[in-house]
Length: 331
Ligand code: ATP
Ligand code: LTN
Image 1: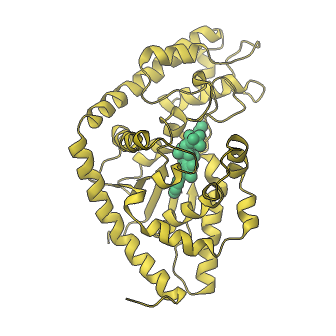
Image 2: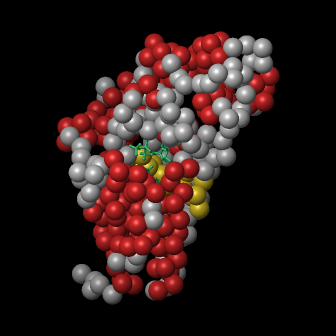
Image 3: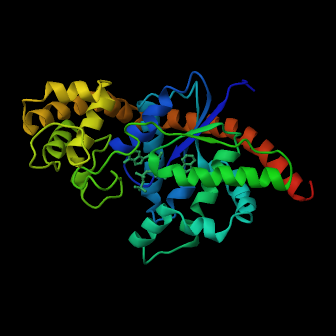
């Protein structure tokens, strides 16, 4: 073992990745690679909690992997793998589900939201989703989990389950910490700035995809909802502009107050068109690299096979310990 602390995170291949996924999660993963032992997973088992077309799911799994690498995740430094390739995730999930209270799952806001959206498919997987997520994290002795703000509640369950298992048996799991950035942990929908930007939103003008071409990005930014105050100001009374300023600042590294100052006497039109160029310039190289990776399926296979091998070794060791402590007979 490297002796470094462990980072684990994942994204579902349930749709095309958005600027929200990038700024809230993946971008923060890149900087952690040198200091930590990082596991970045494509969580395909989670994605089937809403119906998926099999061939789209296969394609998207590779797309998410390609985007990880295009955003700067280096498979030589980090372990990139596909969740369904490591069956220990499901096995641990079963054990932990017997230690999770129904009340805990009932309280989950993501479950409540998704229930509203999927009234025709209220499956048990949607309900037990956070237990599988806890298993992902706990299998790798994870110290910290970099995610967007919406995942805080799920992480609390992972921490509670680690504690519960450790107390019932003996010290087994590391209790993981959330790693959520202060600004940009919740990028909002461009058409409805009260909602988070989501890859499964109905209105495609509400999100920017990492693979959107420059003209699409310009069009979406131009059409984004603002207000009639006509002042570029970071204020809760102006949620649309606040969101655009957050995106601008996160992508350029410039302080929000400096951006505000520069646009004091300028209208929304100019601010939006400059922001569109900031986004285009930032995403263009990512898009190009993404397309290159998608054209090299052999390389992708090499990466996920190697990732699976590395992840499996750790996962197997943890699961063996768990089974033994639980009282299952050794083979
Ligand atoms: P869906 O909307 O289909 O439920 P999602 O867009 O939330 O999916 P996930 O795969 O569930 O995507 O999330 C991947 C990561 O991206 C998580 O760490 C999540 O917190 C983060 N994330 C998702 N949307 C945003 C957002 N709008 N702002 C910041 N972070 C986000
Ligand atoms: N539920 C997460 C995706 C996810 C995840 C994880 C994130 C599944 N397993 C483990 C961090 C660590 C989401 O973003 N919706």
